[in-house]
Image (cartoon, rainbow, N blue to C red):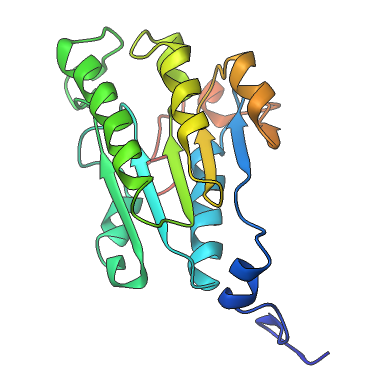
Length: 198
């Protein structure tokens, strides 16, 4: 097998990948450690490299301060799309807003609706970023998410990220990764940094 800095040269093509019916698994990235959204974004890049169609739906992540979206806007021609729902939680003067507002709840419902619409759009990989957390924060009921998962197309690879993933969702997943915070620089008083933490 010929190898270069880019890796093996005789990997499956997209057509091989799809014809072998290998897509359709459910991933959960949860836990209190850093890296859940980061892992999902890495998977999105890998899928794009294979020629797959990728979608990302951000739950409870309104606002324009998430750095990756600046790049996502520039590469939509590469078969990736995203939608962000929810009111902004961060403000320069007041910090992070924990209390829910009506717009947060409406945004979560709209994100669920968007996911159902995208189920019909032939995506190969769909990331539901921070959907797990919405149950803990009272934006969605666990049943809302369970129903959504059960409606997904057979060959759609579905990624659910966020802390506090309910056990019922864990039980449905094919892959569960729990990020554990062994050490975090936030405990040293370092605030979240753009380009690294968001």
